[in-house]
Length: 97
Image 1 (cartoon, rainbow, N blue to C red):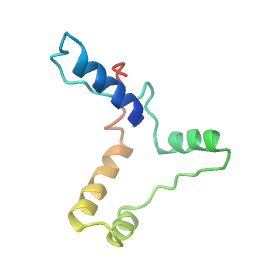
Image 2: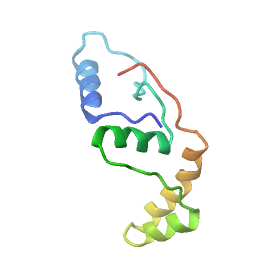
Image 3: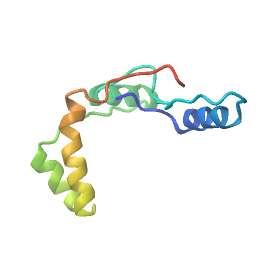
């Protein structure tokens, strides 16, 4: 995943909305580097100075966790997305930001 900071999203939006030349394209925003869950945990560990560990949940564990408070349709969506993310479907990067 190439997670993007909200400030970067705002900066791109301001530029796109105020520039005299409209971009006339979809602006796909990503971080410059795609990280898997373990990579994100490593970045959080370095930034926070405390260990952060990613533990991959089984589909059943994830479903049970989400069922404890998430609306059923939203929980089902997240349960369906997680395996795809683990397989790398969101590993693209762009230089838009």
